[in-house]
Length: 219
Ligand code: ADP
Image (cartoon, rainbow, N blue to C red):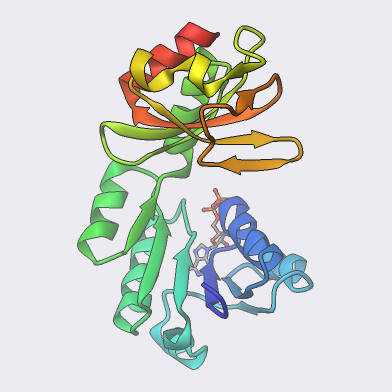
């Protein structure tokens, strides 16, 4: 959201990467970590940085944490600290709290205390890598529900130069090409005459099964 302010608690590998990217995207970021060295490293990159223990309510209050639109609890290894920091920021009134979980149980606890979004970076990345290993032309995907997915598929030599009419994905596989990312720009809602060419990326929507069928047929 434009003008939003973010607080990132814990500037380890995950937290610092979230914080840096938010800065790149043009947002203001307060970074909090109890490790002075880590805070020093990030002090030139982030809008504000503080060395503080995020499990200390008074510290969080004095930082005015309730004025932030979103807090990211990126403490991983110290599960107790992660849970305490999450409860405190939620209790102090931060509307949108996102937290990283190390395990299913850690995630369940975060969910119970009202954390709005729980991220499992290692688990999710592992799943993604496995999908990409078995389907090399699958570049990325978003699961819309248990059944439906949006996937980015690279255009293989087998279908290069074909129009969407020739591909006929809806009739043959049930899935639809909703965009084609070409070198010169993205074609949103392409028509039947639009072609897919090698090195283009197709954005396809459908059930997991439909997308898999399509992908196997073109690879
Ligand atoms: P990653 O796997 O992303 O590197 P870590 O768990 O190793 O995650 O790092 C989390 C960061 O959170 C560390 O830099 C650590 O100093 C910081 N941290 C841990 N507990 C607290 C706390 N109570 N208050 C503030 N920062 C904390």
